[in-house]
Image (cartoon, rainbow, N blue to C red; front, side, top):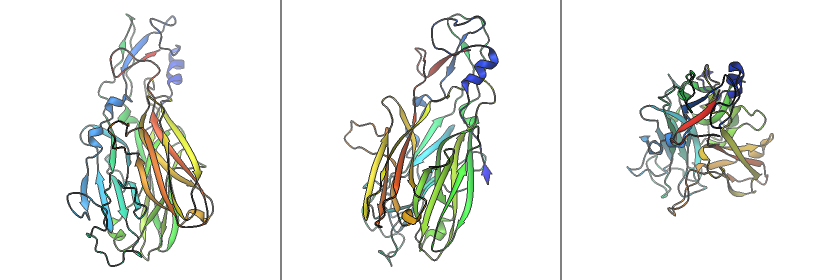
Length: 374
């Protein structure tokens, strides 16, 4: 297992250590306390949407306009001083004949550098003989990468004329850790793998990917679970059905936020999860959504099937990502959508989770600043 670390810390710890109280009112709240202003690490203006479509289309593309072919892999990373916090693997036309084989980091993370990968395939039993670079329909993938700009300013500034020293905070990117776990996926097998954040860390997002894309060619690997574990809340779970004669290596990745090593925790309680659940339709497709609260920002999501038996072994996922609107009015970064194709008569429970950032409890007039009483 390879671990890379991050977590959202606890503001109450720092306040207790300093003998103060938290608050957002004007002036000094208690003797010996002061109000300090900081650069907000989770300010949504730091979420660089321009990097969402930074795709390095590196394998098996039909043309410069990516289309789903027999096997298609798209990947990309965060450019410059940006920290990846998740990704989305959409299929623009919501075609249930498309199966997602990977939606996550497909290599072991090295020095906090990671590439988000979306893998798509078609059923080889239905499309036998189709060459890798032959477009079989106009389905267009829309992978997106979610990146936060680095928190450059970590100094605290006294407000309201307080003559006190405000401690520095630990930058958000220094608290982010990738935890990964790898296991083999054998031929004609259903199997799962999970990655778990440390007990004191907070699980933000995660991903599931196959590590050897060359072995995907000529085989069929169907991802059915990619999300928060139903019974281990700090664990990211992945599951594949492999009806093919070839194997591969499964890689689960959990994006964890460690508590700060020093200074107040400005992310405390601001990453929230909104869940929706329902049973999958039998012998058909099921698609449903979870939405962030008004004023909150979507930063990722989870598509999970909660089943202990074999009822989910033949389910395939064909959408794992942001809900897309083309009316020019709707916010495309508000809703997380999951879609499955269930060929069986069983109806396992499915859970969709939107991961959202809430605004801070108090702000200054300056955009992107947060005020904490210490």
